[in-house]
Structure formats: structure tokens, C-alpha cells
Image 1: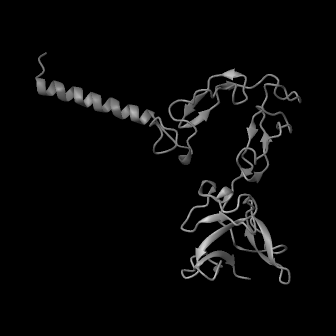
Image 2 (image 1 turned 90 degrees about the horizontal axis):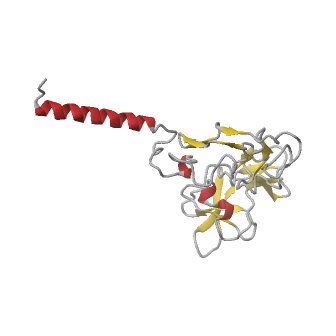
Image 3 (image 1 turned 30 degrees about the vertical axis):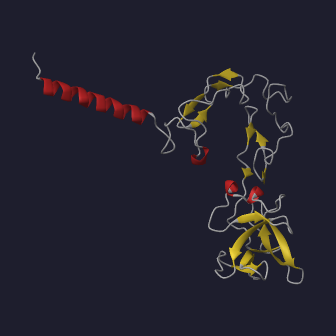
Length: 236
């Protein structure tokens, strides 16, 4: 049957476009950028299209099998557990066994606190570890009735022995730098958070004239020569 040229090319164009749409759908994904072949940890991606070279079932604590990238997350469902896992002995090939974690902790794995455990597959489980949070930093606290929120890494530093009141602080180790106080650890916003030299805990920098601290806090002047200050809680 003779098909006029314009209709023939239009049919080819329709088929081509339809096939392209199907391929985009199959890229799936947990994030908007999943499928662009760029791993973006900030978006929660562990992989993109393929798993990073060197990441295998064995390197993740399994025996053998096929590891793959599904919706930009590493999928170990095709991996087989170690035969020795669960025998109560930490064998050479195992990452962990029972309560034996090879000296690893939440802190050594990049978290600020919590409890690192071992899975039934003899791999580390960091689900009970937690990262630092600035959400309650410099808020009012009391050692008995108003403690700092749990799972934040914050502790209550008493500022007045007479009234037993203080502020929630996050310990740090490198004065004058962002250290654990930096944006990579969840400290985002208009104010800068740095490690205070005199206290060795994270402080929120502010402007005395602007009084730009959070609710329930005030900006205390650091020196008489400038408007730079630090956020402190109002004594409740």
C-alpha cells in the first residue's frame, strides 16, 4: 500500500517520541534528578543508574551476589549473607557480629551520637545514630525540669548556679571554625554558627542592633567596639 511521505514521517516521529517517554518513565526515581548519571548525596542519592566501582556485595559485608542501583538507592536484595554470620564469632570477612563492631561507633561513622548496632547480615546499622541539629541550639534549659531535647547531641550548660538555668549547647573542638557547627551538619540559616574559643561549644553569631536571634533568645554584645554578638536564651 502506498503511504504518502508526510504521513510516513509523522508516524515515525510519533513512534520515536512515544519510545522516549517510556525510557524516561523507566528511569524512575526517588529524586527529581535521579537518572542523570550524577550521584547527588544532598538529595539522598546513594547511586545513579549504576553503582560506584568497587562497591560490591562483598564490600558491604555480604558473601556474593549482584548489587544494583534502584531508584538511586543501593539495592542489596540480590546479595547473599555470609555463611559465617550469626555463629557468634567475628570472622575476618565480617564487618560486625552481634555486639562486636570492630571498634566502630556512630561518631566514627560521621554521626554525633547514638547507638551503632549490627544487622542480621553482619553489616553496620546506623539507624539509631543521629546527626547534630541547630533546631534547639541556644534555647533555654534547666538541669532538672527542662532538659535539652534527646537525639540532638545538645547538652544543657548551666549559666547561673543560683537559678540553675542554662542554654542548650553542642560541644566542638576547633575554636573559630565551623567544625561540627558548620552547614554540612545541618546548621543552615541567616546566622553563622561557629565554635566559640572560650567555651568550646557552637554559638550562633548575631547582630546586636538587629537582634536577629531566634524566639526566646537575645543577642549579647561580644565587644564594645562592634555590634557583633552571640545568641543567649532569656532566663525563663
